[in-house]
Length: 279
Image (cartoon, rainbow, N blue to C red):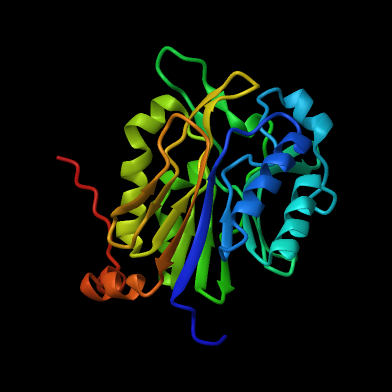
């Protein structure tokens, strides 16, 4: 591949997805028009369809080759000459569902796909457990994509809590990490920013985390605060937690090498044994 481009103009959408593909495609069309002068449009988790009623989701979804939202993204990427990162959209996988992400180039072709690896199975105090694995199937592969701006690492939401995934991306020279999400209010307030900043600092990479926000048709409420964080861990963009929004900003990919040269933690990494002492 030729030398990576230094600057990437990102247009990030903070979204309040609805329960039909068509409603979300309308939002997508407006966002793509606003992003036409950018290199890349970035969408949140469940940008294609957001509905906690699994029976209704099963009726609405199809395979990735037939999914209407993915097709609309491909068409709009070509029309506006932009790359589009689909944060995720649910697709069929046998009797279960995949939380599926795709990266589309400016010619309208899907160049990479990623399925969420870590299922959101949690047991909060005084609240019902959330068991994503009951209806969703986990992905099996991390996906690093070579682009004109260098390597991009793909992930989705709850993956954020598993730092070894992002360490693997950094060890393979990822310059940008995508962490699209639909974070809950409770966990978002406590953990969202600090975990995202940690992933940026640990890897020396740009973190782009488009998020869902506000009260949704299906009754859930999401945290928002879509963030872009530089390789030193500084928050460059925060879209807040109250409303949908879209911002475009140019990021300097060369900041990755600057951060990694100052603190070369990947080079300093040591292998080690493990001793468990019983006193």
